[in-house]
Image (cartoon, rainbow, N blue to C red; front, side):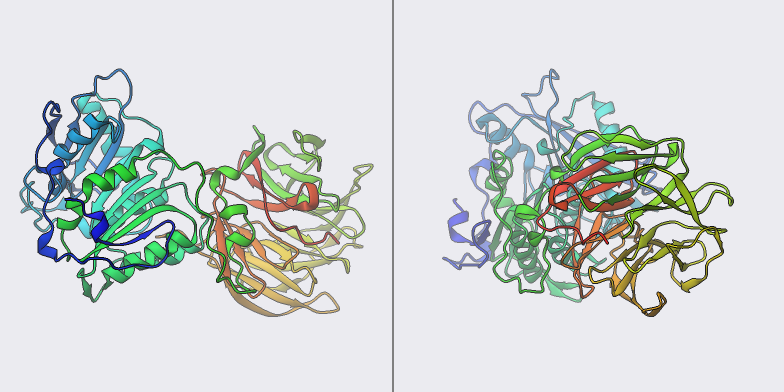
Length: 594
């Protein structure tokens, strides 16, 4: 049976569902590739094991299986595919019959030599259901439907190492050769693993996926549209007669997923049949689903959709070429203790601090390795140029060493502007005011650039949940302050005398699942008035009206603490990322230096 021509489909080239000849749900019948091994096709072996030693999901027991293809000889690592609700996939009498399909497709060369891991969800307490049935496994919804990285950590750090060690097999570390699959809640679980850890899994097969509000999964279409495109390939399957209940509408949710993936230019395919909430349709098309999933990597991805973005819609496609991808980051420098204070001068030269080693570095606008610019100086957490051409800094250390200082860029002479302060980051206005954040006190403090050794300058705003990053809008009429301890950035109107009024929490920062804080840190603004704020999730971009436009992925898992526009045309976004500094080209430019 050839199922694909008879289905409603949404592919990477089309955003509309086009109906063709309908199938009744009961007409889904497995083809020969799923029911029998072709003549001469060797049979892989399947072993059963239990895993009961999870630290991520303590006190759970689960049954698992491993499939080892006959072609695997141990001389080189095999590809990997992981299946949630493993009993339904590993059985040669159920809806999927993966061992038979794998044997046939591997023998044909339609997929690589692939080890399969089949995992049942965890169960806590007594009365564990039999391994080969659905049953009521008490931890299934918590493990599968929850957003965030817990299941990925369980899989990558616990179960896979256990299986590899137990059966002495070699599995590739190449994420392009690692796939993950599931149906219903197992499908959203599979997507979540790849979404959270594309460094480990880049292929997703979702069958009747529960992208609904069971535990917040309905937000994925919105997250996809406002998160930089991740390097994952996704096959979605659902049926028009799937569920419509208190959690949501499954067919509509999957269509929303497909539309969002198309909007961001993902390599994806959506096949909508007429089935209900079962694995029958997904099982029938499994061989072709796997062929599509394992096909060669595309030389170029589709461009993100832009035609319906209105003038004020600040989609990532407006600031990142072709929608961007995490690999667009370029390493500028490494081997530092802790980098912070990224800033630029008017010419586009980059300055940043290695706070741990009390050194300021400079990277020329024309590129090249950063060079030491100021050694054996104070430990600096914030740097900004003023309209007078001087470089202002917030310093760290003992109470005596915590100051606001001014550095002459030619002689590198240091003068103290303010003392008895607890500064974190700062910004300098063209009217001659330095605004800095006092994270512990929850305040913003102002001091004139003309001051020298001013003791305890007065706060101009308070009540902020661990204020950290600070920036000015391009017209310098408003001050923007990020919360490290909360999920907002504040905007204040700047008065002629330098005071602030009208503080509003009108930028809502996204926090990782399970966290109450966004980690809003360093900040910069571009010439169009967008605010770029580093955070736990990456660099969050907001339009001039405070609406979230998207999140740019951070270069590495370590914390991204500050950012600025520098380089030619000041069109490169630079970030201080713990021990390294990175940059990437954008379609915008930084706000003018005073």
